Image (tube, rainbow, N blue to C red):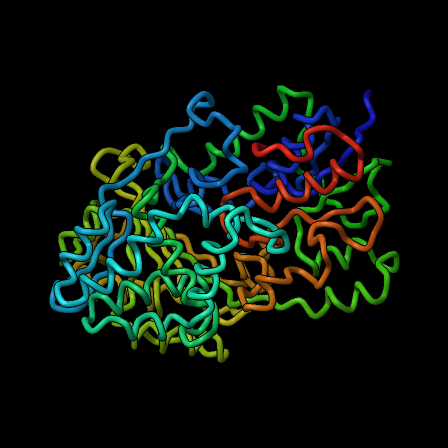
Length: 481
């Protein structure tokens, strides 16, 4: 039996990317996962009825193609096929209207009439410069970007609030487009930095699309595990690590957990000052998520919504801003903003012939045990009358259920920490290297480190590079996993 040089705790995408990066550099790696299968928030299960395949958490992957962490992983060679819908996302409004975003900036601008010039001014340069901007946005938030002027321009404009950005548009459609993408941040739409999300996500839609994985997001994890094991790495599921001193000796330990779990696992061995800094780490709102098995496709009133996998449901900018303000103030909105995905638009094999799966969540106060199913369904039915008549079965996870299912979702926060300005720049604490902890040889590789939530693997890549540098191994500067 070989003795590992490195141990990774947690087999989510970040933990697996970290393990694979180490294994490619010749480091013997063991991965321990508390759940019965690897994947964390990137899994696919039959949550409702046999034959209906639902993504447990992450479903749409605008960063997968753009992320340097996946650049060296040949996804098609592992049987992973990304399916990109003709419409990246749509946003319905009352009276059967909708605004939608595809691959053409001009097409969206033309659809926005008087708001077209403003849309072109904002997004044409962003799409043009996206490959220069992304490495800085997906980096450690400490290093000087390769193209500092372009990155700084994007950062300065993104510091503004979503409301400031929306005020550059006059139509309900233009303002709603900003609201739907900004609300991914889980911040109030008046908060600093909430404006960076509509800029980034819309530019990604134009450049890469918002694809889903054929058969379900779990296929990405299968690819990571397959390559890791081919390099001698080992993944042990059903192995809950309660304390760091339970682990076998290793030169490096990488933790795909949040600061709260690190404090629990480290106990008295965590230096007091560092422990106090971790204890101040803030978690954001939680989610209440619902999956449905449907008799057929959602009967959206707006035709554009029938061609999109992702639909932002919530109405006007003002309605969504009110909903997100309520959540951040600790209230449960009557008309919540809902992020909805319908993967069968491009992947009909997710369900039996003629049937469909649907996935949605709304934001709720952190730690909420309130079941928002009725309110989510009422919002969908508002823009797709007759939707409720199609429901064969449903599965609901409250925010409390989310944490019970995945302890890294503290209070139901699927982003592993609030996306405030401070925590985006100094995530998780004010240390020069955000991946090194105050414990020798122990690193954080979760979404609680830069650049934060999403299936991009960059947190794992950053932590593995730090570990490789400390181990004196080659490959610490490589671009792929």
